[in-house]
Length: 250
Image (cartoon, rainbow, N blue to C red):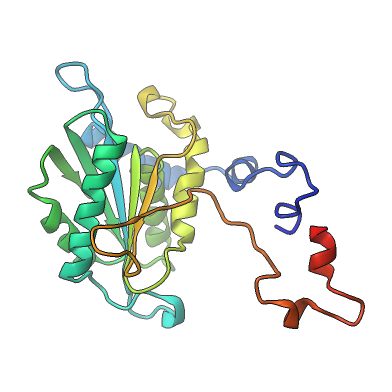
């Protein structure tokens, strides 16, 4: 991370997170099987009767889970009406801005079932919506093997979406799950049998938080933000030998 933010290092000298992830890891057989079954069952992204590709918008809700470290965790297990209205407005804005067709599907994933149900109900009458897609029989315990498989399967599915919208309840928009889902866009080997689902580049990313003003949402960076060890301030980086961060930046 220190080299990545050093202005004297050439921009392309340090690979990005998606490239490094691709070099080190590939999705396991179980989540790939789970994701492929879902893609085939739902006809994700296939052409309709008129030969038009039906885009899929992925929505992920980061809600409060029981038993988690809640110091930097969402404040509620389900979004309130204000947050749901913000989500719908942001979605309508993203559709108008990013999609060239009037019909689309939506895939909804969430850390809690109550949040997912609330979002599905809110978007049920959205103009142009063809299908709301959700994975059934999910194990949301990420510490269990089945829960880890289901989480990775959802990340793989989100990586095939045409637009990625996140709703975060009561905390910042940072999400390692979102960065993983975006990074998986680079990995296409697992969809070799479904060539229309191969992807290049990132999907447009949007995020809704409590910090969004009325009728507004944020465009979100899809790539991992590199650490800046100097953000704490000179009171922490200034040493008897000088400020090493300042020297690196020069």
